[in-house]
Amino acid sequence: MRLRKVADGHHESTVEVVDAEYDVWDAPAENKTEEEQFTFLPKVEKKKVPKTLKEKPISLAANGKPVPAVAKPGGGYSYNPAFTDYQNRLIEESEKAIETEKKHIQELEAERIKLEAAARSAAEAEAAEAKADLAEWEEDSAWEGFESGGEELSVKVKRPRRKTQAQRNKIKRRKEEERKAQHEAAMKLKAAQAQRIKEIALEVAERERALELAKVEFDDDSEEGDDEELRRRQLGKFRLPEKDLELVLPDELQDSLRRLKPEGNLLKDRYRNILVNGKMEARRNIPFRKQAKTMVTEKWTYKDFSMD
Image (cartoon, rainbow, N blue to C red; front, side, top):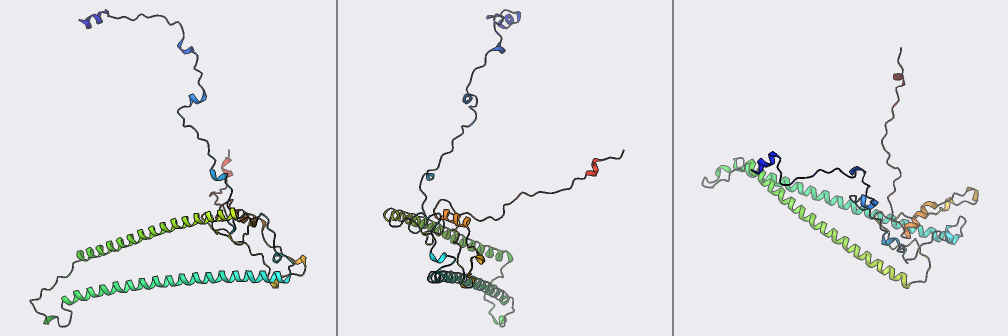
């Protein structure tokens, strides 16, 4: 009955249609701030200044003092030095060169011994493996009747069957798995030892740094540091560059300033000075920058013209 009434137009509640008094499309827009309009965008966080930027750099000199930008050279660095100063500096630099060469020779000898030991152990392993294969082959051949006196054996003795290829492959896989497991265990032990060595090195470095800082606080006798003796040779991933040897040999000494050849490089000296003062880490020397690959072609200008 209700549906019939609705179909005939008799509704229980009717909606009166009234003309609109305003235009919806002319409604004033809401004034939103820029932050309210772009609420869906993530907020841009401001860059934080690192704490270490306000800290004073720690010098790598042995006494912990900052090295001056331009150090006062000694008498041996003069282009016309006194004989005693030049002789002392020549002997000192010669001893340093000899010590460096001795260390280099010792490292080469240690590397040679290590390679020889590795080659010897590999040869012994190959010989042992070949001997094991030969023994297995002789055992198989013996039961096939190739061994002298094999016919005299008692018939009652139960002869072992010859190993099939599947059994040999299974034994080989088991040996390979055992070798791999031993290798993985050794590598894990080596990695753990290396990690422990790194931790010990960090602890020693922190202890050394604390001692150096304490030394700097209580030892105020000298005002400048010396870049000849450093407490650390490495700051970061790479070692500090060695100081250039500014020494003229006796046969290269000149008696006239016109034939004098200048020594040293101010740019290298300043860069090393910044590294020694702890203001910057050492970087790897990249002599040539990697450039993008380009292909040069010649334009075919004759295609732009047509014969009419």
